[in-house]
Structure formats: C-alpha cells, structure tokens
Length: 142
Picture (tube, rainbow, N blue to C red):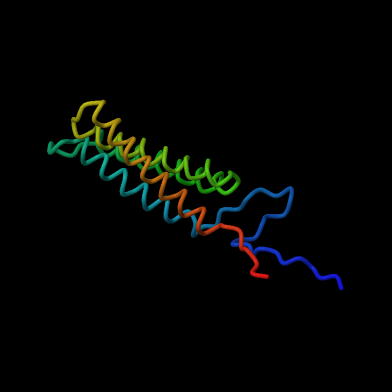
C-alpha cells in the first residue's frame, strides 16, 4: 500500500506567488508603539535635564520614526530569510539601537559600542533559540 508522507505543520500561510507580502494594520501597531517609546526616551536623554524645546521634540520624533521604520522593514523582510540571518538581523538592530541610546547618556564610544555588542549578541542568541525551537521540523515517531 502506498501512503502519503506526513508533512510538518506550517506556522503561517505562504503568500500566493507573485503577490507582495501583506503587513496588516495590527502588525504595525507594535513597531509604532516601540518607536514612540524609543523616540521619547531618546529625546529625554538628548535634553539632559534642560528645558524642552522644539529641537528635542523633533529629535525624538525623528529617532522614533527611524526606529519604527527599521522594525517594520525587519518584520517584512525577516521571514524570507533563513533562521540564522533572521536572528542575526534582530541582534544587530538591537545592539545598534541600545548602543546609540547609551551614547546619548554621555558615555564613551568604546563603552557604548561594547554594551551595544553585548546586548546585540544576547538578542541574537535569544532570537536564534526562538526560531530554532518554534520552527523546528517535526519528527515522526514510527
């Protein structure tokens, strides 16, 4: 007798060939909120307990918009990558974002880069673990 081979369950539907990946409105809420928090924190660090002026507000909006745009781009491009580069891109992004915020506190570039590297490696390892445990192929017990 011939039987069909079992297939691994898929976590998400593949888009039809020839169509662009669609990002739903609810998928944009998380990056926008994180961008808002990042922008407010960057503006707070930039003003260094001085008065709030238009330059600080513009700086916060700019930092938050860039942060959110990068997260949206990672959310759209990331699933097309293999698991290792996907995890590495999130680690690199987190390291750069953290290192930049830390440098706004007036710390040296070397210390900011070192802590950004540590945070980036930590996020990369956590993302790597998540992608390998969540998307691991199912083994049949036969």
